[in-house]
Length: 278
Ligand code: C2E
Ligand code: CA
Ligand code: CA
Ligand code: CA
View 1 (cartoon, protein in one colour):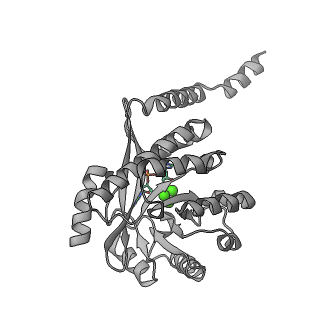
View 2 (spheres, helix red, strand yellow):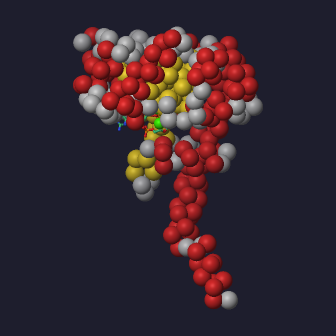
View 3 (tube, protein in one colour):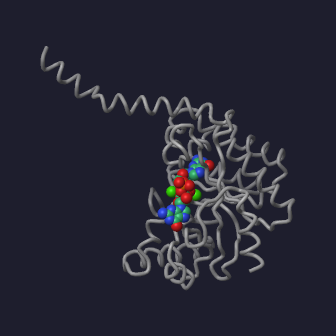
């Protein structure tokens, strides 16, 4: 009986109980966050490396949590993905991003690319395409300016991805593979799927330009991508020398704290003015 008690202690340690309670609370909080208007999209500028000009923005989700303050998505997206919440959350993100994008276009800002992160879980919903079409119709945002960022894990189911991506291309939207190099990737798949862009993961960019291994990796990814007629965005550029190294390799676009951190929509107006008119 004593050893059983001990086993039970191992299975249900107070620490684990606290963690699952935390998770439950977050899940409950998240399910109310939309109505309570606690969610906000931040936007990070995407810069054309050859000119230094703003060529787009990526929408990044934030949650203003009553007790925990401003939360980044790594703390709550996984929880949403484990439940059905991700579908509602994803629809909110897409609608809000397209509304904001349309608002900027109407105000005369030349927004050419609005990048929105889409969870692989969301894409599995049978009515995803119809939902997206509905949001595009409702907001009026031009589909050719919308880019969906999807992680490599989507490629694990090739046949399904091919069908899905083809339907997305029919809608007119662009597709980028996010965090490229960190997950499951197959070069032949890159070729067979209708993809427009890859985004080099921050973990390969940050050691540049002094780490030989990372330099070689970035060079290889860029050569491969260009051979396949894909454009490339480098993530997490924090230093001038990383910028110049990638620029010399012909990397088209970049994002990172060197240019700007993700910011509330209202702050973007300055960015347009500064980055476009000098
Ligand atoms: P991601 O799509 O790879 O986004 C880039 C992340 O790197 C963002 O973190 C951004 O704030 C951060 N970042 C940008 N530049 C730099 C830099 O120079 N240095 C460093 N250290 N970090 C930089 P964030 O906003 O916390 O988002 C984390 C992840 O959460 C995103 O990674 C994306 O996978 C996911 N995510 C964000 N918004 C959404 C969303 O609306 N829907 C879904 N499904 N996922 C989202
Ligand atoms: Ca992304
Ligand atoms: Ca990324
Ligand atoms: Ca990431």
